Structure formats: structure tokens, C-alpha cells
Image 1: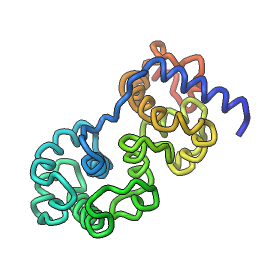
Image 2: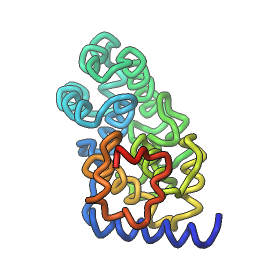
Image 3: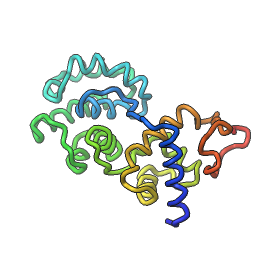
Length: 217
């Protein structure tokens, strides 16, 4: 990883911080449990849809203990519109059971403990640890982050795990949490897939526009 690329990555981080100074996770939540559930539901689903589903889900199952006792059919009905609802309902119930059995009903604060839970991968764990606990354990690489960091020329791979490792090398740990949030907001507002607003983009002078069709810009 070249020093020049690290310098450019930090310039990009500063530009994003200026454009999006007060970023928050797009998933509505009031606890680590709620954030974990919402993040599991967000797989292959928009945050907007998840936020429509979770109020009723959290009203019926406000904590891990209640979700662990839930019937499969009941959870499936509540999360059906998020897609892959059978697998998601199973993962949510099994995750809740594991939290109750191994962590006294509290969401663990360590990466290894989180990824050991059913339905929880590294990306999901990073979301919870970074957003709720303020622990920069990694860079959350969702579709926006993967797409835009490649477009910017910061990474070459399309593999989320490789992208995360490279971004962790490029940026100081203090940037890991907010960098992802800011790129996600930027991807929704400006660097929109298939119709990016390049002329309005604060990152234009720092962007390599890799694989971007000139007609899209």
C-alpha cells in the first residue's frame, strides 16, 4: 500500500467529514439488541424497508429473552417483507437463544463473541461494535462502500473482505466507523449507482472514476 494512496484516502475521509459531519446509522435502533436484529434483517434488503418492519417486531420482542422464546411462524410473519424471511427468522431466534444462554441476555462487546452468534458475520459485528459500542474493529463494507471505494480507485477487489482489509490499511482506526457511514450517505445522495451526480460531487477531484461509463457521469 503506497504512501500516496494513503494520503489520498485521508483526503477523501476529510472531504466526507466536511460534507457529512454528523452521520448516524440509517437503521433505527435504541439498543445494541435492536441494532443487531436490524442489521441481520438488512441483508439483501433496504434500510428503509427494515425500519418499516422493526417497530412491530421490537414491540412484540423487545429483548433477546423474548425473541428466544418466539415461535418461528410469528417471527416469519413480522419480517416477511425483508426477503429471505425464513432464514432471517431462524437466525434471529437462534441468535437470541445464544445471547441468552451464553451472554446472560446481553449483546457481547467482543468481535469473536459476536461472530460466533448464528446469523452474524464480520460485517454485522462491525456495525454493532462501531455504531453502538464505539469500537473500531473494522470497516463496514456494504454495497455502497464496495462500489464507491472502487470507483475512487482506493481498492481494486470486489471481494468485501479484501476491500475491508485494504481500507483498514489505508485509514487510521479512528476513521473506520464514520468513513463507512459517510460513504453510505454519499452513495444515496450523490454517488448514486447508475446515475451518479459527478458534477455535484465534492470528491470529484479525488476520484479515478474506475469503470464509470462516461454517459453515466
